[in-house]
Image 1 (tube, one colour):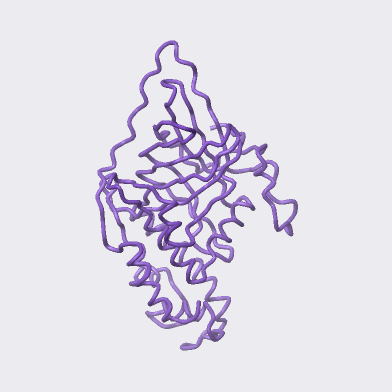
Image 2: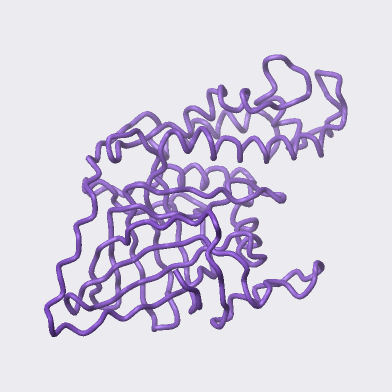
Length: 325
């Protein structure tokens, strides 16, 4: 990515793809309660997995592939995915950073499904934030492969801050589990170069899981929406963390306008885009929050549960895991 002009093109491309300012409405009904099981119904079969791959959109086609229709209007909803896809096209390798975070255990999502019980096709699904993986993800600090906890025999605890959401109600047909709407807690990386994952609480969440076997989930989709308050308090700080880290690495000076930036560096581009009031070679959170580009890209595109929200979706695969909810 070279120069501020590319960010001008980014704004137009991302807004065109993400339909900035186009808000659709979803009343966000609660997930229906599962029917009571008849006295002679067999118990539900419980499966537990850990997410071993997380795929974020690299282009607009994948943004649609990794999204779901959240409000019943026959249109795939994934505005944040479209933004990530556009950023990926501009040279931000968010997928590589995400894969590294999963491999090293800094993204650790656990999933549970209950199949059958009240009816042969009944299904329930929920997710947790994991902790304390055993075995440890990496052999050593210099291990570049890691993933030792993702071999199908891993054991995990639930993180102290993990949500305990009501499971999504759904059905399973032809080895495809569909469930929602409801709430799910997920982790998403919105940066690179060591950026920390952001824990998000999805509202209006839906899932479409491909059940390969009791021990494995094929490429599946998790989608939902994040409230405006989460955009403000979780997503924007994550963007600020990434932009600030790159700027400080590329621009060691303190005297504007060049700030010691390497010519054509990402840090110089960040400063040109965000360092506005005052121009002091420092990017602040308020400058990120008040930036017109950021406001346009992250504008809510729907109403979920009576609140403005930003749709998001991504793909996952999963392997067998042991944990106790």
